[in-house]
Image 1 (cartoon, helix red, strand yellow):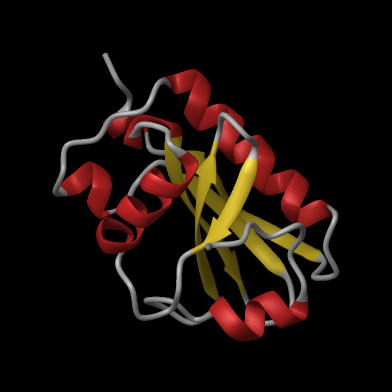
Image 2 (spheres, helix red, strand yellow; image 1 turned 135 degrees about the horizontal axis):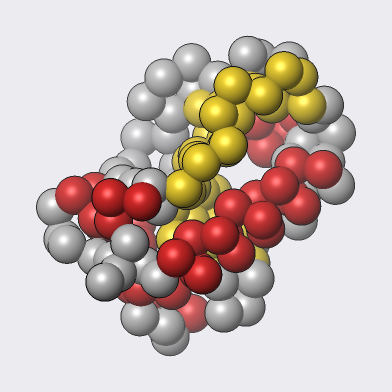
Length: 131
């Protein structure tokens, strides 16, 4: 069973950080239950999401990918709504769900032990909004 994360901690960073680029933690946000699941460092969203979809019993549209970027010591950005799910599978999310996912990610960050630095990105992927 895949367990959700409660908050962003140094332990979470050590286990899941540096995914695809230095300082990045990738997650999937279940916007129905408001739970956050880390994507393992060497696993693609497109491989990981079906396991979560089955466990959570929700459609892909309600599993929003997000990325938390750090400089190794501080959070410097959050982006939501783009991964292989959107690029290769054509999954689209409502604007409301993208905004909710980003809000949940900031709550996750703010409740954790890694401080915020100068924020360089705070975005949703408007390219993949469901029309």
